[in-house]
Length: 224
Image 1: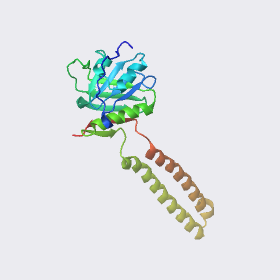
Image 2 (image 1 turned 120 degrees about the vertical axis):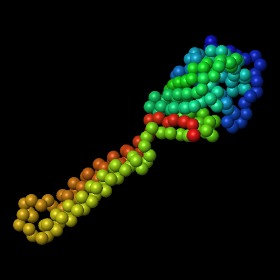
Image 3 (image 1 turned 90 degrees about the vertical axis):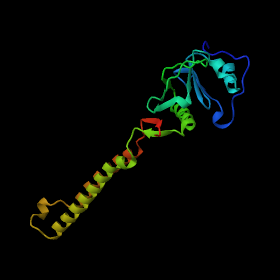
Image 4 (image 1 turned 30 degrees about the horizontal axis):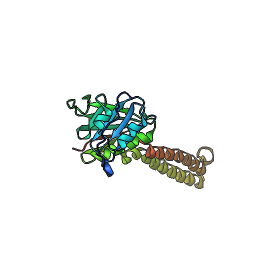
């Protein structure tokens, strides 16, 4: 590919655990040719065909600054200030403090956007970046807490249940009392319980949906 060059002298910089290099490419990555994550940096090459030997060189510990060349975007993870994962579009956005361009080919844009073809790939990259900056970042979701989400449905369920029991008791007592108008105007307690049960069933569906609704975005922001 035009932006990636096969190195002539690989450099062994990989190590087990977090320092192991992670590589993603098309068709999993839609916006870039190659995405490579190391312990401290994220390398992004423009979208283009990638030679298999280039990918192998990255895995083997080649000098990534030479592999990716000057047209690639390089993000130093310590400078990242915000990471946003859009779960609906499988898009990962990193905001970072712009730095001066260096020989590594970093471009001081301040933001990079990576589009993935699957949510699995987007989630994997987000998780691995999170592991590397977790000591100073906190996860935020674009949805309310569980208590806030369930407060409305639970209040409605309790209200309908109390009303159903109250009306059922009143109609039963009304009918047993032998009031002259009981047979014409007072509903049967069984009808009251049946109607209340139907309403409660609908409220339980609402409660379940509020409980299981996933967030649309996940965001990492500085903890302090």
